[in-house]
Length: 158
Image 1 (cartoon, one colour):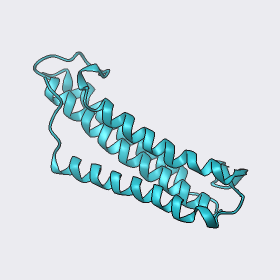
Image 2 (spheres, helix red, strand yellow; image 1 turned 90 degrees about the horizontal axis):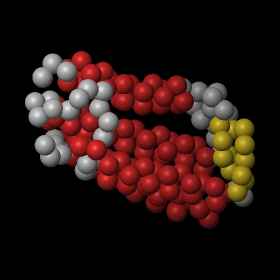
Image 3 (tube, rainbow, N blue to C red; image 1 turned 90 degrees about the vertical axis):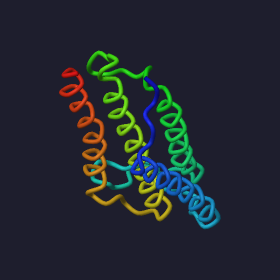
Image 4 (cartoon, helix red, strand yellow; image 1 turned 30 degrees about the vertical axis):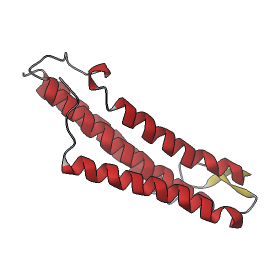
């Protein structure tokens, strides 16, 4: 079984991710000259900056976002190499590969959005909103957990 084709929703998520990633990189580049020498480099669970560092540390966030995007994009081309919660058979392969593609595409978008939010607040030397960490964790865990549960439940019925 080959990699499943992208649906219009997948393409929309991919295009949105690329636009957000390019916007993130552009925003950092445009703001670079106006940045203070010290910016927040770490936030506690409450969203308060608890470590400060050189503005060059800000380059890690767009770099990490780009690396995540590239790695998850490359990995998405090889669904037969992924681990699944059930045995892959010719009967359930398409279903499992489609669930995994959904997971990869949306996880990639969520992570890019998260890195962009953190970068925005670091550039503006503001604390993170108190809701950002729990909401981000909930969304990311849900986007991983639900497809895995779906694969486990339905994948074994083929």
